[in-house]
Amino acid sequence: MISPDSQMSAFEQSIFAATRPLNGQLPRPWMTDLSNPLDARVFIVGRNPARTYDASMLAHGRHVDALFNRNGQSCRGLYDELVESSATRRNIDLLNGLLKQAGVDQVLETNVICYSSPMSADLDEPKHAGGRAAGQAVFRLLLDSIRPRVLIAHGAATIGDLADIVDCPLPPARTEPGVPASVKAGDMTIVLLPSLAPPAWNRWQRWAHPHLQEAALLAAHALT
Image 1: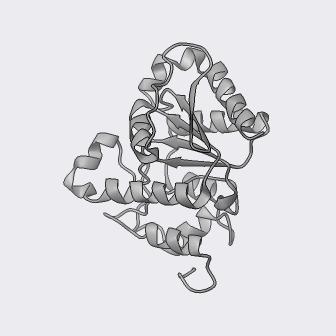
Image 2: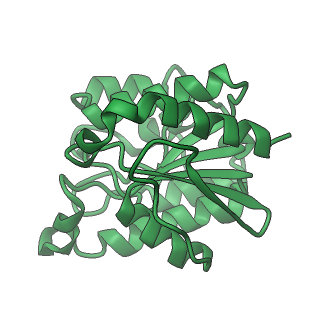
């Protein structure tokens, strides 16, 4: 188990503090294969995770080790151990695979609210008091610390939240086949997609694969 001491980087200390138990859960800031998340150049961004890491079932130090894919722990290994995979997870995996095919492999999957609830609307319930604010603070920490070159945001609510966070008006995602909407916000390229989570996913899944391929190509081009 680790502790926030002088052997940890300032970033790790910030993540250690930001992922302490809150309302019985351990906030989930990201999923990545990277051992150093600061190397990420592309963020895949959703609204907030649906699957919760129960703080009574997981030591905080092990959680942080998994976030940094070290000491025998991994982000994906811990996820597969603790929760049942979702349709959203499979769709994010599809996008991540297409990014790799396009030559983009420094990817971090995160959310504009890094705090779990079954549905985003549940964040207003008393049992999740403070979760929205704490989860959004984690995302702001990631943006400020990592400064990714590309954000791929999926879902209307995500896009709305992200527009406020980056202080830049963002168009809606497309509702029909074609090249995904994208904008420049400072030195970041933001690619906008419909939701990867059901039931919204069901409305566009027939043309999702080529649309996600186009998103991957946009990300690759933005990194050149």
